[in-house]
Amino acid sequence: MAVIKALEALNQPCRVILHSDSRYVVDAISKGWARKWQANGWQRNKREKAVNPDLWKTLLQLCQAHQVEFRWVRGHAGDAENERCDRLAVQAAKQPDLPADPGYPPGK
Image (cartoon, one colour):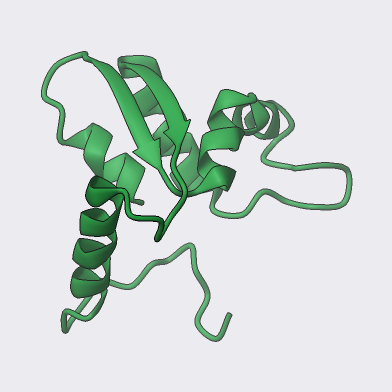
């Protein structure tokens, strides 16, 4: 969600270098996995559905609107910007009355 919110904050097409500590997100976009899942009806393979296809669809659309280069950074390894993002995410998650995530069933 963080990468989506970051790209949604842009009000015109931009060239972006997006740093993330999520290797899954970085690889899914950089290696073309997400596009493949989309082309296969949001299936990762013949047996597994892609998780959160609504978010992947949004992210792919945002990547089309901008020139985005994804770069992986190791989390909790002293990268000042990554550490700040982590603190902000934790702080946001503790807020009362967060909207429900319809794509994420409770109890998982």
